Image 1 (tube, rainbow, N blue to C red):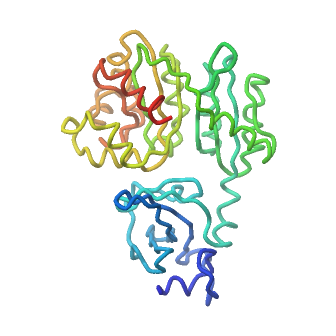
Image 2: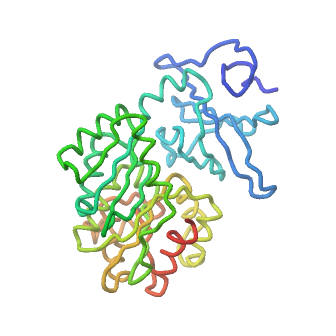
Image 3: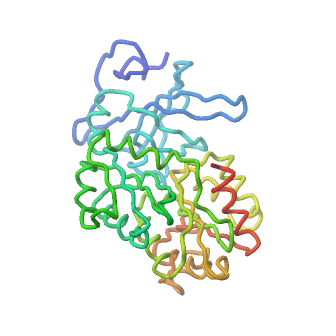
Length: 347
């Protein structure tokens, strides 16, 4: 059995600890998580103990079933950020999409759980035009978007949004209070659970007509620019007729991007980016929606976008040609098909 099994008091291994994880400032801090990975070859879900060394930005994985090290302590790329290591998140480590399902030890839980309180709001049809601004206000106060889904709201469309952060229930409630009855907000932990009906609903608000598919990439969600992006789209006169967050496995991401294989550079890396956290898919409608929105998004090449089209989404929020904020449909004939993938096939 690995030394790791004997030396840390993790819930997953019923062995007596010989020492505790070092959480002292300036030391080699280690955070422990329970994680799972779907192995497509034997089609089984494998359970792992995931160690994150936050001081040195390294990770180690232990196979729970076999009680042995699966990945030795290794340096992580800069595309992985510390906030990726939280319960409910998905992190891509050396080609494997790991879903973090729980804390693995009491110390990690005591350190991170208070910073990961979850809450939810429902923006009614009456306030839908302000949804980007509402989300932006919450993000600016440090609350991370965890899930979104458009729902039917009377004769119109409403939007459910989940957030997490320190004191999220009271903090988000204070932010949205000025919107009155147009925005419902969870007031307690039990109240948060009642909002799950919105996110689990199988209904779609998509029209699958006169549309383009826009996907906010994981890096942009983590950078807390979701609200700004949605507000930009709405303020330019587009209709967002459907919106929903998805946690994509690589097979689904590759299937969606298949028509771009051989067209975009670094195809495999572009697919991987879509698995590094939640994506937010939108059905965006306008006259000649596909062509018009490509101008709003800006060039695929982020350097070109920043230099020549700085007011486009990629010009403002792009990092590089992989982390270029949004995917948007390339050809008019593909708009409905791409929206169908998210708002019909994946649902």
